[in-house]
Image (cartoon, rainbow, N blue to C red; front, top):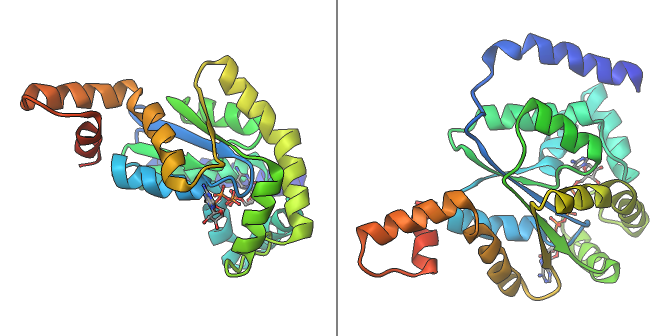
Length: 236
Ligand SMILES: Nc1ncnc2c1ncn2[C@@H]1O[C@H](COP(=O)(O)OP(=O)(O)OP(=O)(O)O)[C@@H](O)[C@H]1O
Ligand SMILES: Nc1ccn([C@@H]2O[C@H](COP(=O)(O)O)[C@@H](O)[C@H]2O)c(=O)n1
């Protein structure tokens, strides 16, 4: 694993010249156990609030598809429900952010461990908000097995699901606690149907300072408006 990480450090230095300025980026992390509904809620957030959705898992799966030696190594880790080295995931995320014209990022399934959070905060910047979708394991397992009937994902099987739950508890729950201590966490029950979960998501999103300034700008423009209308303006 030592060589594996060094390889990425060397490539990072080569690419240091074309860094876009991410200092004004607005970042929201989206956390939750496997199958809690992160991706589902991200789609709804993008529609209403106009964020750029970056799924760490999707970025990793794209790398795996390239069938490079590194991709094959990552595939092995993902099938085992383990985490890919932080350098790899942070590099992929930073590259995707730098090539986006949108400065508002919804980062889904990241950080999954404390060192991922620390590295991202140092190399990019801290998040404004962290959404955490709370869901019992039995419900997540049921959803993932159902999704596995059509997803084609090599980790949507019973054996890997159990390992992913273990990784979530051991590595990712400390991240949830870290952002709770920093008062950045919005904990939302992921058990109700998606549209009901989204009502709670909207409350968290609408509390963001960047969102409130948009709402007040809209109030200045029009005599009457409501929270729903303000959100639609933000997405424009
Ligand atoms: N609130 C919900 N109620 C019932 N089913 C849901 C709900 N939200 C999502 N689902 C379904 O559960 C499955 C998992 O959802 P989704 O892919 O959004 O989860 P995820 O947290 O992004 O998973 P992963 O971390 O494994 O990528 C999907 O088939 C989705 O349609
Ligand atoms: N920050 C991350 C995110 C994901 N992984 C690996 O990818 C797998 C799939 O992730 P999903 O978010 O799509 O469920 C996950 O089980 C990990 O193996 C990672 O290492 N770090």
